[in-house]
Image 1 (cartoon, one colour):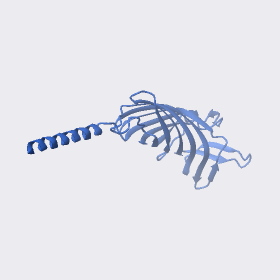
Image 2 (cartoon, rainbow, N blue to C red):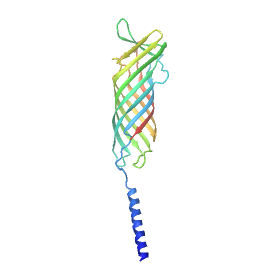
Image 3 (cartoon, rainbow, N blue to C red):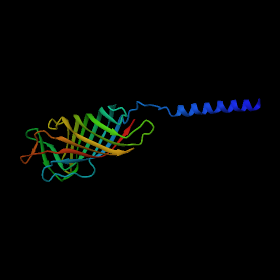
Image 4 (tube, rainbow, N blue to C red):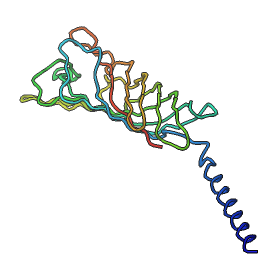
Amino acid sequence: MPRLLLLLYLSVVTVSFSQEKEERTIPVDSLFREDQFYFSITYNLLRNAPSGYSQYSFSSGVTLGFLRDMPITKDRKWAIGLGLGYSYNDIKHNLKIAIDATSGQNSYSIDNSYNKSKLRLHYVELPLEIRWRNAGYESHKFWRIYTGFKVSYLFASKSIFESNTESYGIRNSNELTKIQYGPYLSVGYNTINMYAYYGLQSNFDNVKIEGKDLGLNSFNVGFIFYIL
């Protein structure tokens, strides 16, 4: 009888352990989604600049927003991301934007006499991207390559120029391009991801310096961080 009871006890323990082990192998979430919130910090380089144009200090760019992750393959390694975000650019340069005393219109020139000269731009952005990652439900550490295209709408701006003799602050200039768009790419592993974006539109619309288009297309390079 004692042997029979011992045998019965061992059988119950073995079955219980097997069931517990089996339960642990069941996926917690086989319909996982990845990287739905994003935040980036970048250095803003201006391309197609006129002669004599230069930047100083650190021209920063910051974006943050939400992307709906929509897997398109069974293993969920490929997905489409569609989102809504906010973008801020603080450009420090030697471009002087002043108000002409005679015409009351904005005038543009290259001026190195500044104590402070910057352009602040605020956008609402709509990103659309194709995503690849070697992710699984059991780990949030994986390689990713995301590439896409975003459209941005400029809803607020301010240019500042201060020198020893002059001071100008101009808000929401009509000469700034309202709609921006361009491709972007983010590549990385886990929390460290490189990011680059190139604006296909000039930041200024029909503005000339010495008879030539002002240009100044945004080129942002830096890091982007994703949160579930």
